[in-house]
Amino acid sequence: MTATLIDPARLAQIENTPLLAGAHTAPDDYGANMCVMEAVAYVAGEPNTDHPKCACPVIAGLMRRWNDRLGSGERANAERDRLLKPLVARLVGSKSTLEVEEARRAMLRDWTRSAPLADWLEAAGLQEHADAVRVAPNDLKVIREARDAAWAARSDR
Image 1 (cartoon, rainbow, N blue to C red):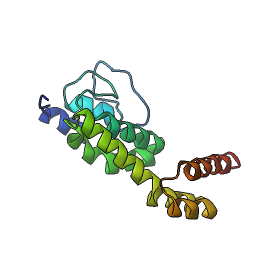
Image 2: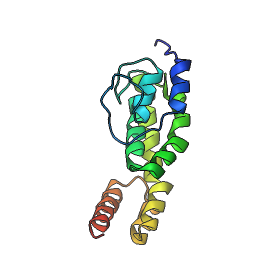
Image 3: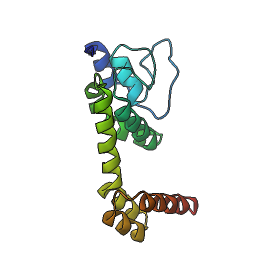
Image 4: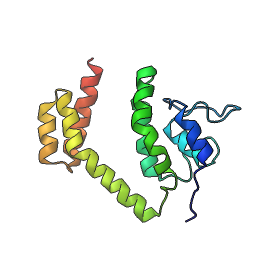
């Protein structure tokens, strides 16, 4: 694999540029409006994209979802900057082998199926599903039932 270099001037520039939700077209002054993964591409000197070649696609997928689920607006942008901007330089060059990607995918899957999922279900008032996930964190039937209950609860708002 080829090492990807970080452009220090571009890295410094994103410190003064808020990260935004969603995808952005490349303006003439590329680097003015970007999400976290567009910032990774920018710092790595890649063309404007939220799927930079230098980043692990598994981690990039998580980052895109996290970026967009923080919402929009000034407060969300501040949270995005606080939580995600420190990760930009670390994501440059995170692309690895298929074996490493599969291991990362498995780790992410296990993590999302364990404590955080149960905590999120509990916070949503879905205690029965939270308890079921804690007992059987890798049971796809339990996870699908919890997912369906969460979507139903969200729709009821």
